[in-house]
Image (cartoon, rainbow, N blue to C red; front, side, top):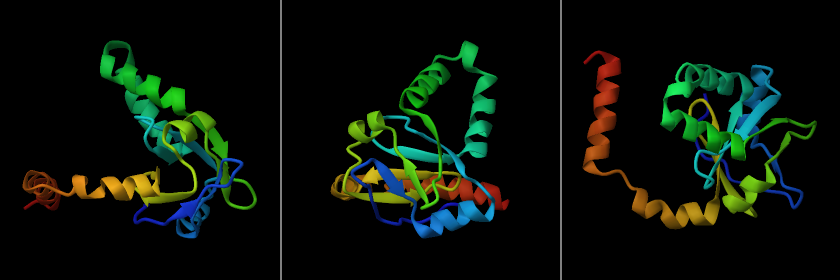
Length: 151
C-alpha cells in the first residue's frame, strides 16, 4: 500500500531512484518489474506489474465495446513502458513521458494506494491551492468511507 509524498530528483539519464520507503514496500513483496505510464501525459504512474495486469484484465472485458476504455488504453499504451528496477533501485522513465509531463529536476513521488504518481514538484506545488477539497469533494469521500464502514 503506497501512501505519502517522498520528494526525489531525476537523473540526467532519465532514471528515477525510487524513494526508500516505496522501494522497501516493493522489496517486501519481491517486485522488480513495473509498468510506467500516464493517463494524461501530465504525471507518470508507476505500477507494480502485477497490479497493472489486474487493471488490464478488468479493462479487457470491455475494450471492444467501450470508447472510453479504448481511449484509456491508447493513452496508457502511448506513454507506457514495462521497466525493471536496477541494482541501485532506479527505473527509467520513458522519454516521451518525461518530456510531456516535464519530469526533470525535483519531483514529487506520491503514493496512490496501488501505484505511485510522479509529478514535476514545482508545477504541482504551484497548482496545489486550486486543487483544495471542496465541500462536495469532502461529502463524496465521506459517503464512500461511511458506506465501506457500514455506517
